[in-house]
Image 1 (cartoon, rainbow, N blue to C red):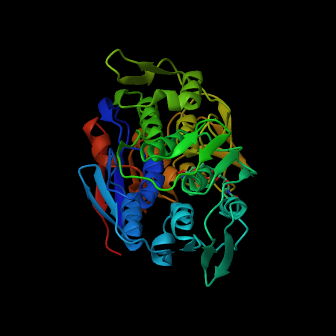
Image 2 (image 1 turned 30 degrees about the vertical axis):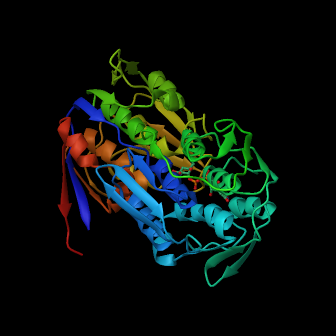
Image 3 (image 1 turned 90 degrees about the vertical axis):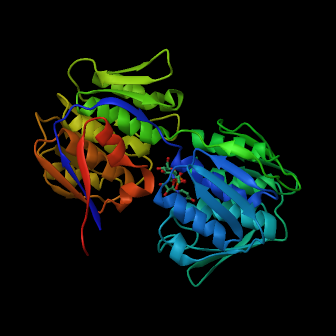
Length: 419
Ligand code: UD1
């Protein structure tokens, strides 16, 4: 198992280029199942979750080749079963339900994790697909869906679920008639998927707002498409510049999609400035101060940046609070940050962070993707050595993170551990 070793305290200086978005690429790759012709995708990040999705596509009958950020995908003979071995590592696998039901009228996808049908985490996906005529049973850990062709419907999500909105966009694109989706997720990745589907000939209007209209078409063709840049990776490097008191320029940083984060960073005393050449400069603009943050669906503060801004607040003056409103159990980084000297107390879904003069390096354990990123950020500013174990989580979502950070002056290296 690999681990990361970081010697903290180096201000980061230089340029970082932002990779393609993981969370946009995953549904877009899944949507390739809908194409009758070849698809060419560019700006696809080289990540573990992407490789898992490519394997899933292969098993479902879609041939893929991935080289230098380009995926070529071509459906040969679509199959309807996504096996547990693949699905267990990646919740996003459930996104193939929509395309498979839409095209084949049948889909059998292993349930991600051990949750019962109808309960979290995919109940909203299933209820919405049921409104379009699908029927589901739970069969030996698999969600088995069938329908005699999906039919357009009016669907109101209980909560603006990102994956649910994406699943339904794909299903509705090839359904019979018109589908109106209400209370949709407005995340930029939903818009990127809709743009991709439209490039294949879908008729989707309103993506990026809470009401989306989809007029079903008979079939979708192949196309060429470039995946949007990763706003969460960009946000993480904005925090890296600020936390190390460095000066970074990000290339390909989607500032429009990062409004809520940038507003909070500025409140904390961080300068984020768009340069005339398209780069985005980040550095401190004075001492850092604590702020209050509440995660919300887009355009609110992204839950995927919660752990990283917490690391920054750990070394700010004064205190601040972080309220997590999207996921129930997303504070696994808190005890690890505390092992590095952070002062954080937790009550229900709120963390109270009191800034400290400095963090101290320690051996810590990564627990999930964004939690891992927060430990890297803390390690970059901590005195001494931080050893982060279980970094396979990071490899799911950050392309060449230690390479990118080393290139701007971080003392960070990967070690391979037996066992
Ligand atoms: C996506 C992102 C993830 C991000 C999240 C919220 C991808 C691959 N992942 O995840 O990085 O943190 O959006 O911005 O794009 N829920 C249910 N039932 C459902 C669906 C969701 O209870 O049927 C709950 C979830 O457990 C969670 C909340 O709703 O508490 C939001 O989930 P959702 O927006 O669907 O997130 P994902 O699409 O899984």
